[in-house]
Image (tube, rainbow, N blue to C red; front, side):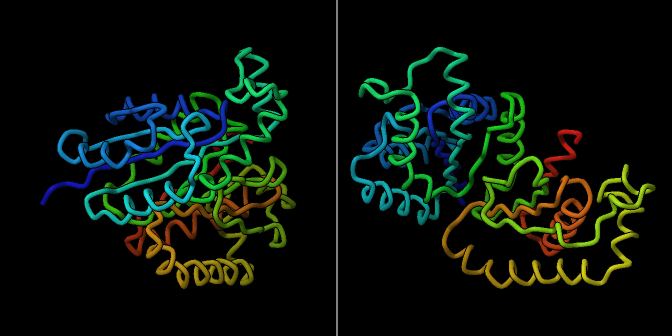
Length: 289
């Protein structure tokens, strides 16, 4: 049986990190094409089945289709092709971060030719790319990521299965650092008992046994994990049937160190044990805060 070609489409607002993502994919063995006219995408995918088993293309404001229905139908056809495993990744960042990046590089925004200020160009680009963003299988917020962080994130995400299976990405985060913007589901764990208030546990993360023992004393914590498990499990068949490639589930607590880590890790281990393609990321722990 012929192996499926792996297609990654990168999109996002200007300055968010799309070029970095394409370079990383190239290093991972993908044949990368920047700014491909979309009328050629179907032909490219057809040709790639014989020549390029791993293909990555970018869609941004420069080659955004005027007829979004055309792109939606095109992408849906690609996702339904049994010989193709496709993922649409939308990369973005906060407006203030994009402005700062443009100020530092002194580059012109692609929409600046329309006699718009940078603020206006970013706002217009947001509107023009909204439809593509809504179709994304996976979103990456680069507001707090360095170039190296983004490279590692792309590498981690692309190291998953080549089969057309839903990849479940569980992540913990701290609300004090801002809500997770790249998640499909966001759940709040701040109402649960907090090990932070026990001095001997403060330095231990939710991955360590003393904190696990702390949570074992509170049936409500286990009940909450069971409820999230049930919610996700009952909806996964419909999510998988929609041909999605990734589902990101974010659990937040105040600092992203105890409660959210414990719950995200618990859910990850449950779904991994059931044979799901699952990944885990602890944002606050990775940053050391």
